[in-house]
Image (tube, rainbow, N blue to C red; front, side, top):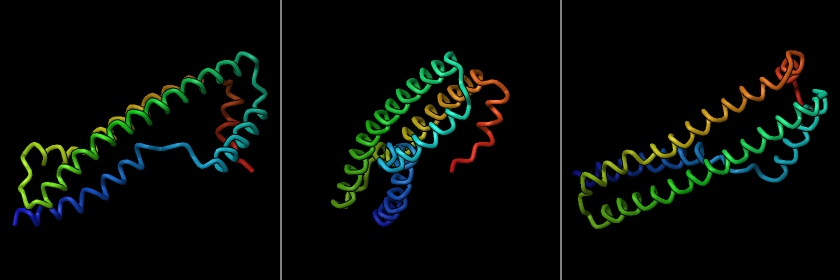
Length: 151
C-alpha cells in the first residue's frame, strides 16, 4: 500500500516539477521573437526622444537586468541539477520497491522551493530596476510608455 501512495505522489509531483521549471527558467526567446521584441523596443525608444543622460541610464539598467537574468538562469539550472538527483534517487527506490527514507520524502516534497526562491528574487530585483527606469523618465514619457501599442 505505501508504494502505491508513493507512486501516485511521484506522478503528481513530476508535472508540478516541470511546471515550476518552466516558470523559473524563462530562457531566452527563440531568435525570431527576440528580433521582434528588439524592433518593438527600438520603436518605443525612438518615440520617447530620450536625452543622452536618460539613454545612458537606461543602457546601464538594461545591462544590469541582463546580468540579473543570466544569474537567475544559472541558479535555476543548479537547482534543476539537484532536483534531478533527488527525483532519480526517489525513482530508483520506488523501482526497487523500497520505502523511501523520511529525508528523501522531505526533499521530494520541497523540490519546487529553490525554483520559487529564484523566481521571487528575480522578480523583486526586476521591480527595483523598473522603478529606477521610471525615475529616469519624465511624466510625458511615462505616459507614452504606458499607452504604447506596438505595430
